Structures are given as structure tokens and as C-alpha cells.
Image (cartoon, rainbow, N blue to C red; front, top):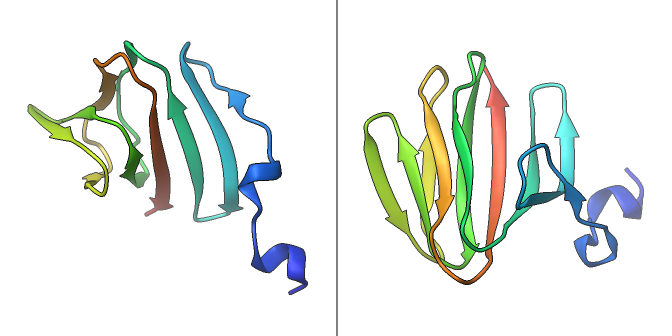
Length: 110
């Protein structure tokens, strides 16, 4: 591997708006079996309830306060909290605050 493949300089990457308003991402790594990205969630924005039939997803909170709905439970999380969204389990992300949230979100295909 060359040096560019070993260190990802996310500060030089652009945020890309996703399909849901208020959510933007920077893809850090993409592999056939999964990936990892930084996700910025604007104040008072939510990612609607959804599920992934073939992959586990996970999120690590880098900045801010966020609520993760996983199945029928709600987890109110802050910096350094980590949650797992198992495959075939409905989940959603909510930023009910006036501040942006930064997450590291990854997925592993089953």
C-alpha cells in the first residue's frame, strides 16, 4: 500500500450531502464487506427509521448529543458512546439539540 492509502486526511475531504436533509458524510474507507465514514448531523435533524437486511451498522459519537432508536429502545448518547445497529433491526438517528453532531459510522456485511 502507498502512503495515501495508509493515512486518510479527512480535513482535506469535502462533506457530501446525503439523501436525508441535515446529514452529510465523508467516506473514509469503502470495502466490499463494509465501510467507515464521518457523518455530520445538523441541529434538529433526524434520519428516519430504516433497517439493513444484510449488514450490521455501528456508530461512535465524536461530538455532541444524539438519540439512537434501536428496535424499541432509545439510547441518549454523548461523546465517546458507541452503539450497534444489528442487521434486520429498525433504527433511526435523532439530533434534538441546537448543536451539530459528528459521528463515525461503519457497517459490516454479513
